[in-house]
Image 1 (spheres, rainbow, N blue to C red):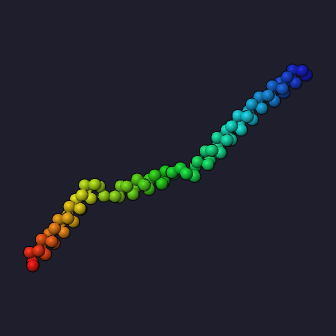
Image 2: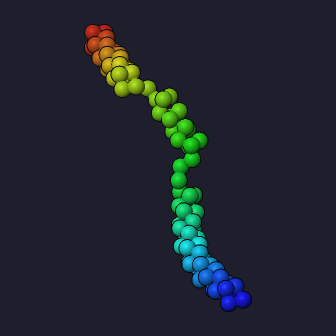
Length: 83
């Protein structure tokens, strides 16, 4: 019987340390859960990637600006020559 009492005492001591460890894990989980709503999901990342891929490249933008400037200069030149 004294051996059983000793074993129960050891289990109770071990359970106390297990409960302390679980308490620390609980705090960690609460911090993680508080952070989760602010994290980006994979679907949101894919949406951003898709929108970036749809944007025109820099060379396309400069080409468009060049065409617009050329058109404006041509219109100004034609307007001046018609006077």
